[in-house]
Length: 408
Image 1 (cartoon, rainbow, N blue to C red):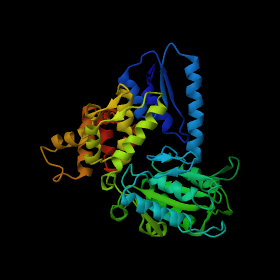
Image 2: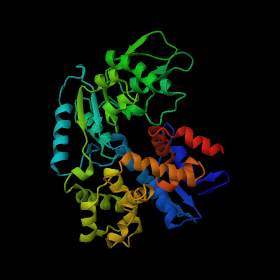
Image 3: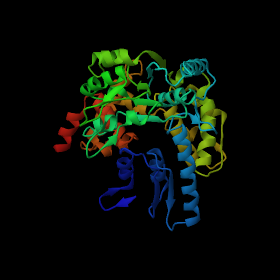
Image 4: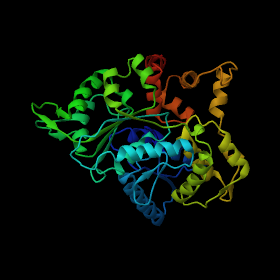
């Protein structure tokens, strides 16, 4: 947690921002509940205090490998869950989620022949609704499930090497790109609007023709992978704002799945809450608490601006802080804090008077001002990762303002 040139939490951000997302185990002599919870929120797998119990470390590493095997087969850190056979699933009994599952099944079963070119799919929905899970379900329920599923996180690919990562390169540094690596499987272009418009233009003919030219090469290479793209933005609005090329949108939007917001899935918040309690208790080797009726009433009535991901993180924190017997309303006290702060920052505006995007922008501006322009510090204040902070800053056009504050 304490390093000569920063903190362990900052290192987690750097590690998770790279091309490989590692499982992180924190080992420290400076352990406390707040820092443990913060580390878990940022994605740390476990948190061990010194003096180190080597038997416990061995068990933790065993659990890392077990979990990562399941993630490789299907989950990938998704907001919902993965079944015992490694196939992801969308949890919920509401009509909205049931309709999505039926559509996913129909798309997955379109063609049993691997040689048939499959139509592109565009999955839309707010952050945290399970777009990644839907994409994986399409792949793992299809005839191509035994081929690779390659997820391309468009929001975190380094600008300096993004074309090399996607298309590969020929010559002395011969390297297969992510698209070709999928072979006859599936390529997921996660958050397609995060790619620059110029790169979208280069991607368009590749998707149309299913052929690409590696960097430095002269020959074209065919690939047979299905293309699935996701975005948490309204595509028509993104086109109007020059964040998404219209021709690429129409090429990707052959088939469309829109993931519902959690608040539109009646009864699912409580069902998911109970499931996440069991999973968090098993993950952190803690007793499994029950959820009181009063706490379930809060889960059922909250608007969940962060959708399933917000619910999952809240339940994990409650499990970590509970006594192991039950989770009550006081364990869910953080619900609504962001909305209340947004209301105060807006000068008393009510949620109906203030758009979510504007509330988010104001919160970020305030956090950046309080942190003197330090993006990492502002992200910690808001309870999000540095990469998530940068993504939202780009979305709101705040990059230059924050940079100028930092310089001053």
